[in-house]
Image (tube, rainbow, N blue to C red; front, side, top):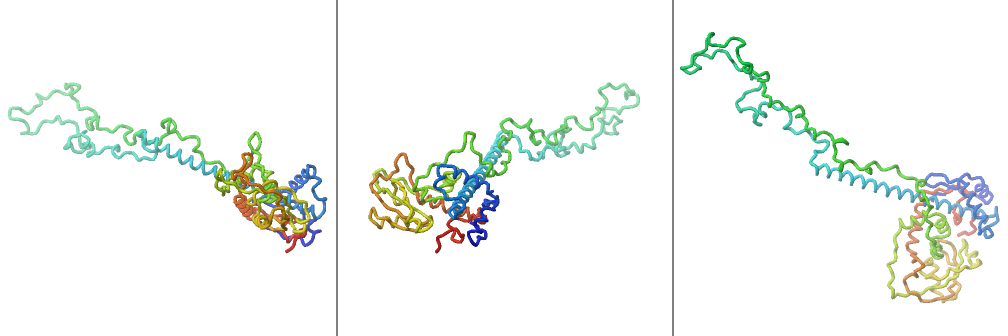
Length: 414
């Protein structure tokens, strides 16, 4: 996550928070300060009002930083979910278009129609003497069509007739106009009627580019071949008409693994639980029905500093397993007998103090009314969120992470 320059003292930090028009950006989109003011107003008028710090105090500035982190995390999850859904939708559209194109090609091939870009067959070009003769329209020795002439009714040359046939004379030749009507040479004698290529012989009708009228009904391009719509934005991931699906409630142990900021964002937007299902996979195989494992009732407190954790009033985590707790804390609890107060123990979530108050053995499979806790999967999701924060989130001055040691209101120093 990119951090801007930090104020040098608490007064400057207070001014930066008060005057900031935004709390930061997500994917270069500014998140207005008014959203933080609205969320804080809702919290101060809700059931947690008595547990919130006094307005204007150092603790209040830390509370504002924490709430800003929750809002930025919520927006990050909405943006990333929209991006992933848009990518998946585009891939589905591309696959559908490819399948439709393939179906269209198969349908064209099955009905015998040549493809739209098929060249006219060579044998339908304007016939030549050679091709007409080969096709049987003319005898092989017919000679060029252009040389054909009407029958010659002139007097035959001497010697061209048999001996007993006298050559015609003017007396024997019929008078002009006395020939029967059908004796005149036909007007089309130069070219036999059946030798002319048909008017449309140059390009068969079925070789033309198909139109909506000529294409068979079953090969008309389907409606879903249209180009995919433009990529969705976070605003496009609208809830169904009956409202968004509520996020799955977290157990206390899951909240502890995710950390307070991520757990609060999980409860506020269903986008986070949807991303959890998209970007992570279960890491634990299903337990056998005959397996058992120890369960512990644990009281616990966590705070930014060791002193605050040691003096805080612990709260009950209920029944859990040590595998469901942060690894450093679980290791310390295993190393001490039940009933021992363990800590402060430092983890990435802060400083912890815990006590095992009871133990019992239970079947390894989760109870029917609960879901299995998967610490490795939760940890993987936390890492993924941290990577996306680093890539997409920028914090405004005055809204650094509450645990950032360089901001003036963090009292824990190394």
